[in-house]
Length: 594
Image (tube, rainbow, N blue to C red; front, top):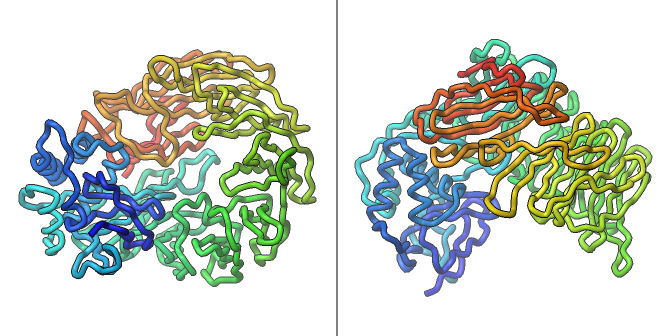
């Protein structure tokens, strides 16, 4: 009988298995759950063809996982199953975790046609998709396994494993940030041999461990760390816990009406003594930050899955059944609706267009304004609204198409900057919406990054000839390219991303504009190191490079993550084991921890 559906055991969404399924792992597109497909549902599928024998290939992958060489396992997985880096990493993580002990779901989670497959166990690992990503570094001690099928069989029998503790998991920069002091850092650790998990913190000022929470005994799930100046908040699915920032002691814990959305931008915002949390069931909850007691709750009907801070209010894009989509501004103290802004874009051939949940919204509290970029049919609208008076200040049309990917909007005190599919960069004046083209190059995709002192910094992705990324400085007043710089590293890495610096490629780069110039930091391989230099803001001239060795266990390839920038200081994580804070202006390491 043909397979009609295969349900995700986490969110129960239907997962349609492709007819040409070769790898034993699929990912739920709705909740990012990684699922090992049972053999009964794979036995009719074709195994991958190629010069490498399938059984030998999977055996080698499992041996690499057992020996702790995950990076090589990911490389071989990619070659064997012809998948991308992200898919291969998720698959190897899932296999490693399931060697240690899977989360078993009832057989009703798997269906073939209208009948249940009795006794089937779906092996599920939920890998949190947003916020704190779950990074696991485990070395199970198991005898040699000849194939993935045998590994799944052994897992089903509950083979015990001796596990090393997780060193780093989901690190987050905490306050203070931007006040001249080094940021504090919180992260979670897990010891599978004890089935325990902790939240940890260390103090940036000293580089010393500050505290470790009590054991959480938590299941794997959608996890998030968040902090204000007094507490660290830990979220797992629908459980919310507040820890004293000074000592890690539990202040309170509560159960929310639902988990947080996986695709949430800012699902938790702090407004002094009030904590506002958005949950997947389209509710806003106003909690007392000191006690966790719920002061109010609001039903949002349909919403964007993320809050934004607008002045003294919290705001969400939400759909009203009567009037359509608008930006709802709520008083965090009471939950009352303070404003509902409903921008509409006129069109000559269609009804007025509304914003969608994916359209960009930018806030400028300096003049109490919010900017909307929206419209499905060309021309799109760019509108400025006074969010206190709830009045439209001006409206302008965007005649050019916006890129389906790599679309970006950034702002400074005077302009909004955006890119188009025609390889152009535009500036829209905040005063009246006047649009000016700043640059165009048909051989590049131009992505605005940030603006400082009338210089717009641009990531330029070459599309003609060999592919490479460049960093450009563009005159934000008169237009024109001021300078171009080609990093040795291959790709830009955004804050929060985790990836592998391979020996075969040239690594990752990130930059930070400052009043003294543009700090460029690159993670390189073949001697794992950071390369730091400062470029002139107006001329792009380099001050000279300084190299900083990284302490990693495998020199050929290593994991790398950019936690973020705090002024001149870049915080990175290397090899899933150590935080390094680098003063980009001086090229000095100011902290290594733990």
